[in-house]
Each structure stands twice: as C-alpha cells, then as structure tokens.
Image (cartoon, one colour):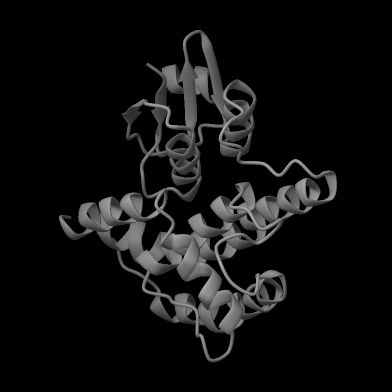
Length: 216
C-alpha cells in the first residue's frame, strides 16, 4: 500500500489527500512534521519538506509532483482539465495558491496562530498576524474574487480540478486560524470557497483536522 508522509494540517499534505480521495486510492498515513526530520526521511525528501509519497519502489516529494503522478497512474476520474487553455489556467492558479497564498496564509497567519500556539505552545505576535490579515490578504482576495466562478466549486472549465484543490487547501488553513472571507467585500470568492470546502472530498478531511486540533 502507498505511504503518504506528512501531517494533516499541512495544506500540501491535504492537497494530496484530496487527490487520493478523488481517485479512490487507499494509502497508509505517516503523520510526520517537517521539523528536525531524520536522515532517513531526507533520503526520501531531500528538501526535508512534506508531503512525500511512496508507491512501491518509487518515492516522490512535493504535492504538485505527487498529484501529477497520481493523474498519470490513474487518469479517471480526472483532476486536471483536458482543454489546453483551461489546463494552463488551472496550473497557474495551483501555483498561485502554492506560492503567493501559502507565503502569506501559512507563514504569517496559520503558522503563528496554529502551529506556534497549539503545537509548540509558544507566544504569538498577534499584532503581526492582524497586520498580515489587514494588509497582505486583501490583494490576494481581490485577485481571486476576479477569478472566482459565478457559482459552484470549479474555478476553471466548469469542473472541480487541481486549481480548486490547491486554493481550497489554503482557505482551510485560514479557517483553522480563525479567518473567514468577508462576503460583503468579496462575495464571489466567499461563495466559491464555501462550495469548495463543502465538496465531499474536502469536507471529511476538514472535520477530521478540526477534531484533531480541538483535542490538543
């Protein structure tokens, strides 16, 4: 059975978990955190990051690489759009979520409020967090508001895709950090995020993670 290394709270681990759910692929979870990883793990994931996926003799780090591999290994149900232009847009939005969104959501908001506060039991600079929410998130939300669909959980091509998975994973972490999209300011984005997080491949994972955090 394949093994997925990485803690559930990671948006990148969650990204792979959603893809595995869509594909109906069973796997074993190894919920390691990317702090002080072993030399053995560095052999699997040279950057020391999560997730990492083992499938027999094949070992792959990086969420985007893993999801692309899963798509090639088991093409149906498809995660990536088939139309070239839509495929390109989906790849770009996935990259935007994994970089621009993650840099601000993860490092400035989720990490201090959840990882530092709950896992590491450390002090949080709440002023810095509130400043990031007030100054750094609005331009991201403005951009995604323009990209968001009129309705539903598909931001490109009318079908749930890798773009929706990547974007949704960042908004799960925002929610876990106590931040919601202001529907009066970003109505399309708020409706879109709600639809993505209600997707049957997302919702059970979110409920599981919330229960894990509540038990801490």
